[in-house]
Length: 225
Image (cartoon, rainbow, N blue to C red; front, side, top):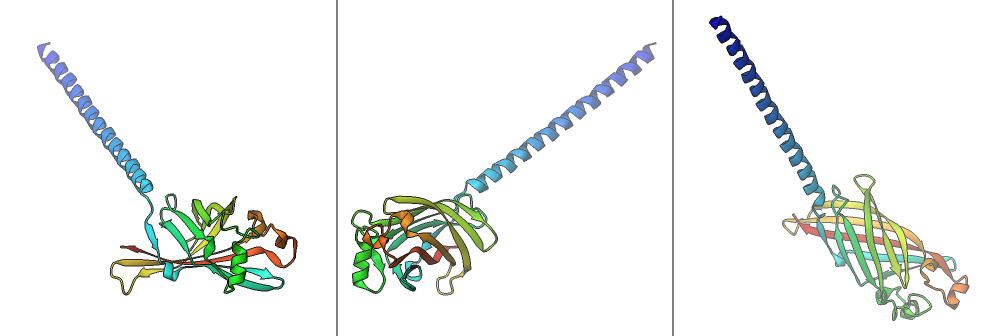
């Protein structure tokens, strides 16, 4: 009988030792999984919370051009004074963004009389509305080269939602500036000038100037590696 009781106690002890070992193993496994999930989630949040890379606009190799019909012939022009802040990462479009400001008085169509007329109240009214601005709200990736930039364009006192098609034209290390990356971007779109109240004076009532304006932008950006 005594032998039987000892044998029974040994079995019970062995059973509970086994259960305790299983519980410890399970706790370790749960802890490991929890830590792993936390690190994964934290890592993803860190990646997506990081701001996209800021690029410097090389104004000497950037152009803001436009064309509009005068009767049946296209008249071309450009704006020579502009500023831009660009944060762009092809792999992190959620924090990529772009803001532009263009000085209306910098309009240049190679005709000083026409340029003054464009700055007048008949068109841009530069004295009351000196700047054209664009502020992005979202950047969408279509493929490795093409993107869509959603945002608001303000001309005079009118603000409209537009979508800028953006194309990467090239990226490489600058051959003459060690440790510097250069990026080429291009955007071309058409807008209706009357949507922004440009040309709403007596000239808008004629067929002299077309409504559709083609905007053609080429940018060169750079950043440190």
